[in-house]
Image (cartoon, rainbow, N blue to C red; front, top):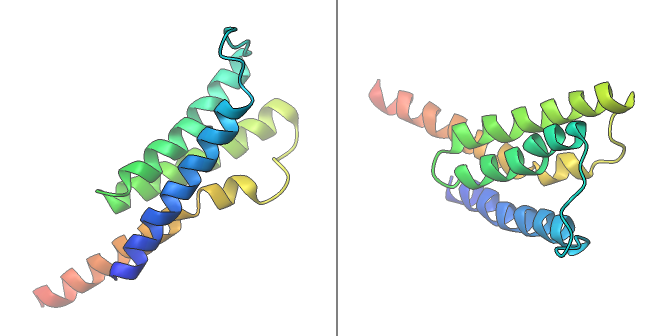
Length: 118
């Protein structure tokens, strides 16, 4: 169980670091960002929602997994609505992968707790 939890945590560090490097690495911080309304809405779910969910997963695995996976799904739907296509490649899903470990940990810990209660 501990390996599952810590795998999620380590992947969270890598995922969040990659997102932040990608997001701020190309930014010109001397100029205000020029984002459309659609881009601002999308940014609420990726990267903000995914980062929030993954970080929250350190303490509340189930809630963190739900927030991350919901943010990913909403981001995909918004991208489909705004552009007419889904994002290509596995990269967005890979950055959400820590939530799968959090979800697995949460499910297994609930299962163990219910078995111990009986």
